[in-house]
Length: 254
Image: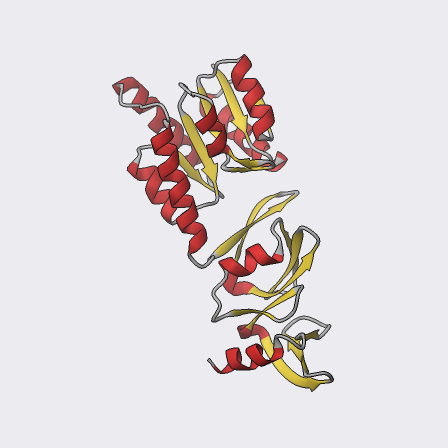
């Protein structure tokens, strides 16, 4: 059996290989791609019994890869996305593992793929199905974010949006402080993140910072029509810009 794993995170890849070895109880022949470019090259040169694929990769969505290359092998998606996307997968009968998953959940996904193949009920992923999944993914993005996927060296961690106290821009990514004063990195820019958050809870106070109203402890007047804000479990105060102060005051009372 030959398997392709499309996953950009090393810990996530290692977990998949461990789950495969446990399920089949033997070493399985497998290739590994961390990007769309790498996966495209492997798919053009090899054939696979099935594919395990993350959705968001280093250079884009795996959906775009499968829209580009005709895939006859069954695909089991492994991702932290839920809500609309999870419903879309179930509707289309596609095996799907929701991160963080257990060995048991992994086994069920493999058994589902095997069952569909034995019955002859498996339909190769086509463009229309991919478009449905991409639409569902966009719908999920358009709802207020409930949690963020934090990729650590040790694996995947989920951070609930309600537990975020402060978000600070840092180049093309952001540093996030949580309720326990721990700091995490999210691989998105500030503009993208603020669009995903509930505007009743989160406010962009200046060019580089977003605050959660539930963690504001004290607000003080400052020079040039600015406000100093004390955040729970955060030593340094943050400051509104002159241009956002008026809207921030209105937001506090809304």
